[in-house]
Length: 162
Image 1 (cartoon, one colour):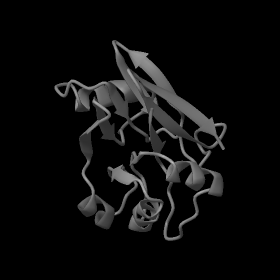
Image 2 (spheres, rainbow, N blue to C red; image 1 turned 90 degrees about the vertical axis):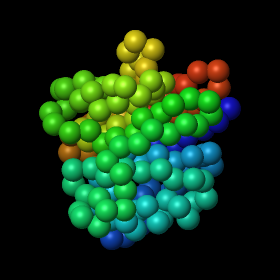
Image 3 (cartoon, rainbow, N blue to C red; image 1 turned 45 degrees about the horizontal axis):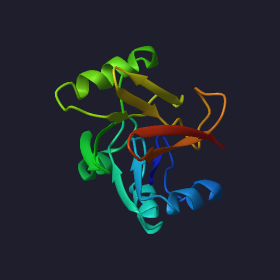
Image 4 (cartoon, rainbow, N blue to C red; image 1 turned 120 degrees about the vertical axis):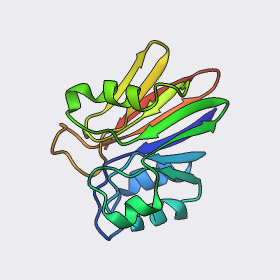
C-alpha cells in the first residue's frame, strides 16, 4: 500500500511550525503533497527534510518568491494513478467545479486541492476530490486537519483531525 501525505493552507510565515504529530506521519509517507498557501519557502524546505519526495503548488496567499518556485498546478503520476494538484480559487461553494475545469482534459483519478480550509473527501464520476483542510488554521473550518491518500488497486482518502 502506497501512502501519500496531503496538506494545504499551512499559512506559515517563516518558522517551521507544523504540529509534531503531523511531521511524524508525513515522514512515514511515500510522497508529500502540499496544495498551496505555504506563504514561505521555508515550509517546503522543512517538508523536504522529512524524507519523502515533495510536490507542491502555489496558492492565492503565496508571495512572489513562492509563485516563482512552484507551478500553479501539476499532474503527478504515482502508484499507477494520475493525481492533479492545484490550490483552487474563488468561492468555496464552487471549488470542486473550479478544479474540475482546471484539469478537464487530464484524465485524472484524483484531484487534490485546498483553498477553503475545509476537508473534502468525495468521489464524483470515478474521480476522488480531496481537500485535506488546514493543519494550522481553523478560520473556515471547525478543526485542523490533514489527509492521507492510500493507493492499492484504487485510491482512497482519509481526513485526519489534529
